[in-house]
Length: 289
Image 1 (cartoon, rainbow, N blue to C red):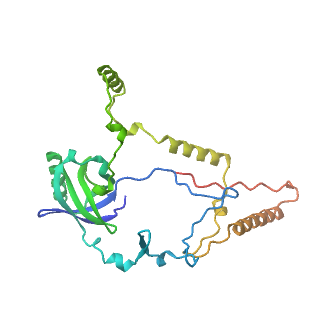
Image 2: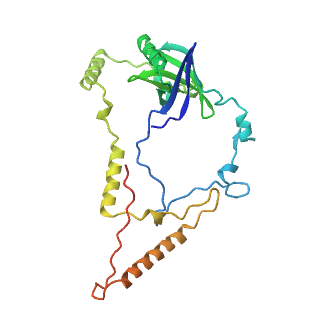
Image 3: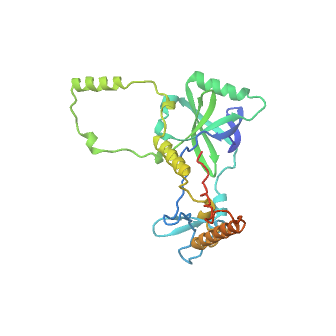
């Protein structure tokens, strides 16, 4: 793993140097869009709706639209705001762990001690475990102020960023306000059903069936040769913000190059060789990992 941030955990006079690592990763098979007719990749351009020009990323600013007016925010405007000036993760308070509602949990990060002596790291870890407390912390990451829960998982300090309170919706369903009569017999039967499904949760027992079947499908197509050369799906690398090379022209060029290669192979054949040109094997895409 590669660290994405370095700083220090601070509470009182205690300072714990740490490195921050993303704790999760996406296991989905990476897919992209192609033209159904010829397999060519679909490209997206950043085109200005006023002048019609394709705009390079370096020339793009951000803006806020209130429905009637648009406020353009330049890089200098954004840099003037309080951002990642501090490299500290400040402990605000220690709260009982059961007071942190899981609905607020967002992204997870592992913390590694960034010091030759991890004593302060170990001290904080042991303290959190013994007191059954979760530290609520503030820090800045990628130009945003974050609120997070600091807890221990498998002997490692872990940051779990939290949604702000105004980012969590309140559920209001009138149907649930209506009184419902449930008999003791129904409760007993329901509890019996729950008991029949009771078990200890082991996440290793569960797999993403869709992604597994998708990988199987891709492997089967590769095995049958039902694939095209990846090079033929590209229309060429376009410069940032520049025009995208015409896909059909690139495909025609690829076909012509392939024909010339076959012609050269035919010319090099011995006279007693089979007159029928050898079929060029279809290229295979890189197998999904």
